[in-house]
Image (cartoon, rainbow, N blue to C red; front, side, top):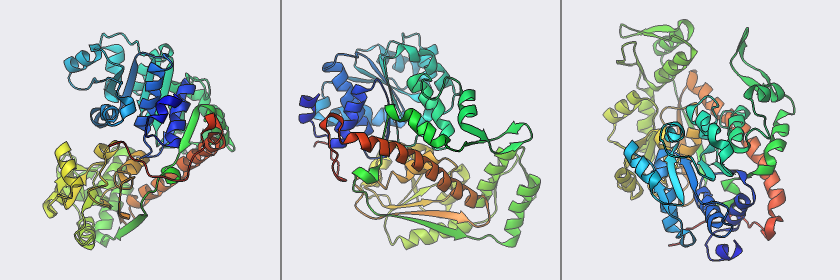
Length: 473
């Protein structure tokens, strides 16, 4: 492997990470955005295929857009990966089957089709290495993708999980992720035993438990259990990231507008322009309150009922305050997008062409949905200002969307504005994101400390100060 790496343009921490995968048949690689998870994994695959002869066929499971636009392109970009052949098994059933039957080293499939591949494709699952790009998308043990993959997990000799957000909803996320990785060796084979050992009930209604919190000392115990197969690195330690300014833009509702929201929160029902808006349960209520904080809500028949324009006014001020610099707007609900489009001349970043024109500076104001911006998009060349018109409860989508601009290659200070309606659920969501970030940061830091303690001596690799990463031209 050393000869191969001498011919590559990888940096020290990438070399260390690739060697870690080669030397650990089961590996969790927690790397922040921009550190090059894909090229690290591909370098390890190259070594295992052609130097160690330990594997012959690799399955990569990843988000749809990443599968289409990242993995095979990375093979083409790096000279030392030129020997790898990738097949993208994404598309119609016939397209997937044809791709899976063609001869290749690496087969790439989107995570939504894992259940199809395992149970309905009719193709033998004979991969001796599986790489999950965004391991956090397997945090639910009740999801079909998890249940399907767990069935064939014993057949796989090598298993690698890549993510920058391992516990976006708390430490409970880790059980399913590590159950796939090591088949239950470290955190147990059953979620119930994991809960009993490390957690106690938190929010509950009599016998119904809504959430759990870690027992005293549980966090350290969990970190210790997973540390031997896990490495973690933060972008701030290894990349020269641009400055980041986080800003909260507060808007206030009138007494009448607040009463509309308060009656919904209090009674699970309110009236807007003569139409009833009802919420059947807590989840629906949360959804309705978020919509109303943004300025509109769907009634019981699906029609959009406008309530206020406070956020639109604040958005207008923010765009004007950018003084002609490009602005990217993150929205959540469809009616948010419709109201933004009615008020401003914007373009939705939903295609390869629109993303290219944004990065060329040809789009002054763009809008994007966090679910489509979550992974694999480089938008830093087009602008440095992001506005959250509506918030999401998902820390993963929140952080990944921010990282589209705040990343390697950004030449300006990144400013992220959050338009928050005072005294509404917006404030709770913002605090929840900050608290989740603190919890996840503790996990990252704990594993990072373990990694750093070993990195300086593993295979003679000594990590440098923060650096700039460039792929070969």
